[in-house]
Structure formats: C-alpha cells, structure tokens
Image 1 (cartoon, one colour):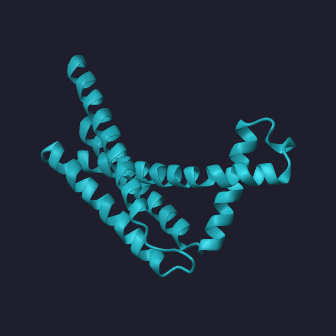
Image 2: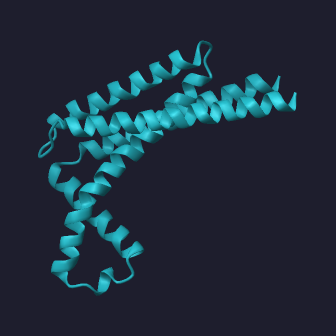
Length: 165
C-alpha cells in the first residue's frame, strides 16, 4: 500500500515543483533587457562579494571589469540551473508513470525542450530581449542533466528497494 502512496506523492510534488520552476523562468524572461541586465549585474556583484573577500576593497573600475567579465558566465549558469531543475522535476514526474523509462525520459526531455523554445519565442516580444539559439542549447543541456539526475535517483532507489526485499 505504501508504494502507490509514495509514487503519487512524488508525482504530484514533482508536478508542482515543475510548475513553480516554469513560472520562475517565465518571470525572469518577462523582464526587459535593461532590467534583466541590471538584475544579473547586481547578482554577480553579490556573488563576487561573497566569494572574493577583497572584492569590496577594489576600485569601482576594477569591480565593474570583474562583474562585466563574470556576469555572462553566471547568466549561462542560471539558464542551465533553472532548466536542470525543470528537467529533474519533469523527469521525476515521468518516471512515476507506467511505461519504458527511456521513452518516458525522452518525453520529459521533449517537454523541457518545447518549454525552452517557447521561452525564447516569448523573449522576442519583450523589450530589449531576443531569441538566442545559444540559450536554447544551454537550456537543453540543463534539462538533460536534470533528467539524468532523476534517472540516476530512480535507479538508485529501485536498487535499494530490491535489496531490502
């Protein structure tokens, strides 16, 4: 009796988390190019200050140069991270369904890829934003990483479950 309850809990938790991640992606994509750039710059400054103790002692020009250098890297990491989460939750959701796990994972990846595509199309209509093929590629890699993590977790759980019985 516990197995179906656990599977349903995972299914609906994953579904809710995937919706939350999708909402966050939409929210970030809805920001104008200028607002998005300022948000990235501010976030980069906070990350630099947290990891580089000397950052706040640097001159304004040096800080601006470091932020300008690392902000694009953090933007790519944000794309990858958000779509990794989406892939993880879509993958976990799909693995609770009946069917071949490889096919279910492919469906989850396809869904994530379609969402990434819709996100890039959405940005065409936002001031100062554009469709970026490179973002689509990073999003796809992130989704793939998340789905692989879901598959790995599934097989580890299934292996432990078999050893206990």
